[in-house]
Length: 70
Image (cartoon, rainbow, N blue to C red; front, top):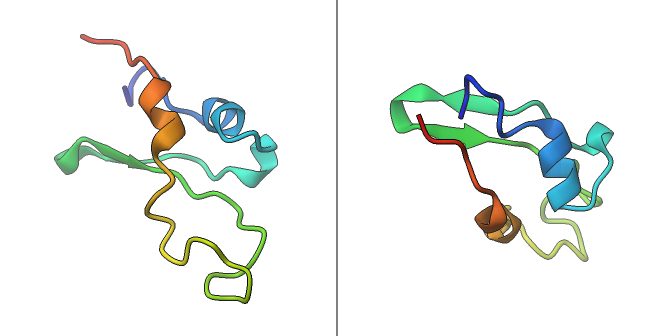
């Protein structure tokens, strides 16, 4: 996944209907075989109107991604 760059800014922007400029570069964490991607938020966390203070429930669109296997 990391080597092939299967998860990249363009993919995330497409999945979340964002501009690539609103997607941070994926950060790969090898020990956990994990990846973190930061998305620009329309409001600061905790502001009035913020609907996801922790950003923890945003994984839904990722369930459609098919990753290459070695």
